Amino acid sequence: MEQIIAYLKGKYAPRAIIVYGSYADGSNNEHSDFDALLISEVDGELHDVSFVGGVQLDVFVYPPSRFEGGFDCGEFARIYDGNVILDTEGRGAALKKAVLDYIGSRPRKTEDELRAPIDWCRKMWQRTRRNDSEGMFRWHWLLTDSLEIFCDTAGQAYFGPKKSLRWMEMRYPEAFALYKNALFNFEPAALAGWVGFLETLAGQRD
Image 1 (cartoon, rainbow, N blue to C red):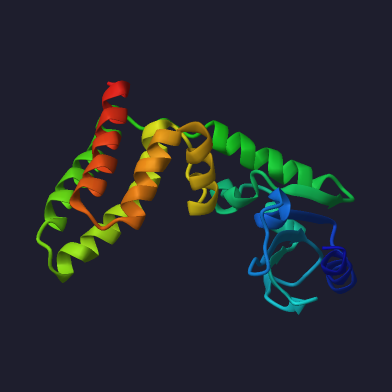
Image 2: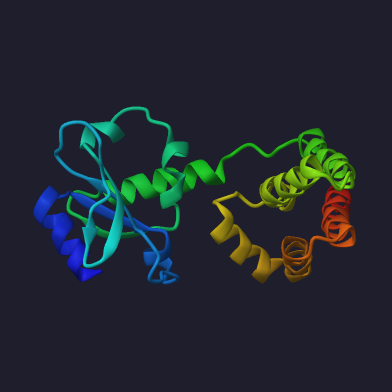
């Protein structure tokens, strides 16, 4: 990572560097991109996807003006657990705090808003039982969308599959086992078990 940071400093002379994703939480492997947000005196917004030391970058570079005045913190929610590794003017820390405040103040969904996706999961499960191409498409669709639905129902913000699955495994091991079983086993009972858990979890909130 030192080689990448040296490259970023040399090319952009950033005022702030926030590293997020797998290189921030230590889960990176040989296939991982290097995710970072930079604040630098650049013209417009840049996206650097260069390779440095065999690692592909996924680095977004913004001018300071991007964060002056009102801006949508939701666009930068990905840095919520990032590491501010350079911050010459306090802009990086201020941005991360704004994002955390935004996440913490999100309005809670109503019971009706939470229940509707659960009902959708039940209907989708029923349609998977067609045992044809459309049914199998709905199987994958249900498994993909239901991860975020689970997070909503559990009161957890959804930050993509990697973080959400890790959180589920730690906080809801039973849910993780059922979801994993449905991912790996194309059997109606496996998917029914996962949907049933979602319905039970939603019922506990009623």
